[in-house]
Length: 298
Image 1 (cartoon, rainbow, N blue to C red):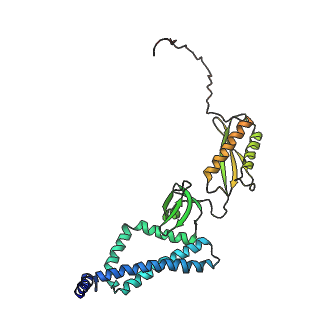
Image 2 (cartoon, rainbow, N blue to C red):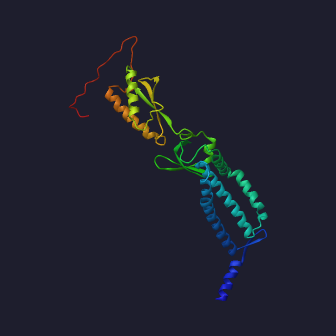
Image 3 (cartoon, rainbow, N blue to C red):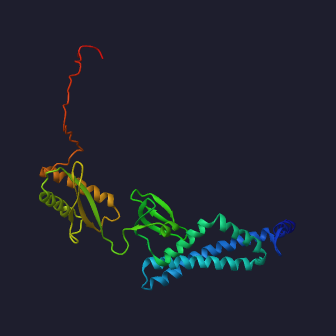
């Protein structure tokens, strides 16, 4: 047994390679891995049971508390990693060459990651977006469920999670339906036939808006005469809502169903595209085509 333990100890303490003045052994690698596991576990305990509980006693808003909590967690990992490397005796001065190579990599291949990381810090500080907001950016529309330092997770109405790089929220135009005032106005276009009584149409559309439980009474719904179209008079029904900001398609669909039914009951026509042909001069010759014998096979 003693011989086996001596052999195992010699394997564990045998030098594999050196980093500067530090000899790397299996024993040292195992201790390093174990130490970093304890650091990760300590970060979770520190962030959830210390920082979070302290922030809950303050009057800070939830998005600000979340941002501070995440930053404190990252700082704990950085400090713990530095202390761990010092504890195992790794000469950090020997990593200057590696640091220079990493710097070159950052300048060329990792610039997008660094840009997203810095954008994440800006988002957590300035808070142009927050968890729970309904946003549209880069063709993606949905609700923000998580903000990381590199990316933000947006969940669409189809329950699809989309990971959006943070730099898009800084460099592109972002529509935030929940920023500041939670209510928003939706405009539903409606085309009716020429000759329609505009007053009657206005009463019908306002009645539809009033009957919808998701439409706010204040600000009041309104009807706009938008334009004269090629085949129709184009109106817009403007409605305000707060409960359906996160489901705009559902609100538009329900109002369109109700408008279609109400127009049919009121006898108001929704026209098809049409063209009128006017012959101003000359004559138009109409010839009868050849008769087709229905008994003949085609």
